[in-house]
Length: 379
Image 1 (cartoon, rainbow, N blue to C red):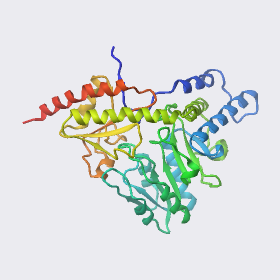
Image 2: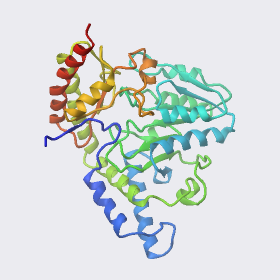
Image 3: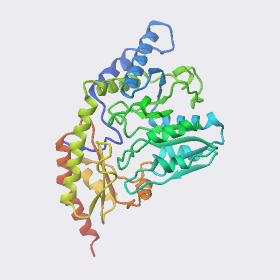
Image 4: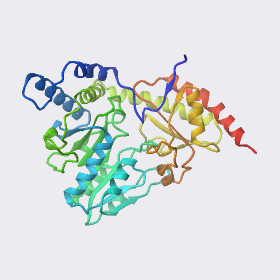
């Protein structure tokens, strides 16, 4: 059977071998509750705290600023819910039209007003527009560090500075960027930052919310004193340990920069090859100021679903820019906000295990698939 080309790392990246190796003892040998004083509990407590240091080290944070969660979605929900309640349950929110559905849905659930700021043709928001939308009633600004569909990097540092001067909390959703570009939580100036493990080669079921030192927000999940009373419930020790191991690998010997350079090379190859081989194709998002591992292509005249299915039959796994919150491929709110065709897009994303052969596999299959599908639609 021919090898498949997995080009959907932005949805979920394969587990790094070093993370699996670190997790196995805590799946098979160490059952202790980290809150217990017995020897078994001390073993798992040490493992959790070591992982906390590893995650903090990758993201320029203090270990005590790291709160482990079940993933990026929980971290986002905690940030939005807790950030608003710090100022009162009716506090207003300022966010953008291109945020992930976990952010937008969390904002819509709140009782205060939510202001959506638009973006330009490459999906980038203007920090001055966000700052201009702040009012005396604004409790929280929540913005992404990089767009999850088109890859555009966002200018968040200026927003953090301006909001801090007005005592407005800023949450940065870094799930799409974490593990692919350098992130320094302290230098960024954000109050809250969400991270997901499975998008950088860690295990599914693990993530973190970074909470700035000295900031207290109420816990989203209650019922225990875990995570210094910031997130109740028994810690998922194996997943946390795997997350820490993946973070430690990325922190070692310039590994993040090396992987980013390889990802940029592969995605650049995909863009150049696809643009040359497929007429009526465009690249969405900023072609230069983007995360290195993700590209989004618009394909004229053919909807996303048949292309995805045909590529899958040819052994290539990709995603569409259409909304990922539904099993059905619905028009993408991100592309709509950019003024692009929201029904016809292809997102290819690479990661630590990707090779040049993956790009070749995609480029060998895509032109013939598009030609055949267009022929079916021709009068």
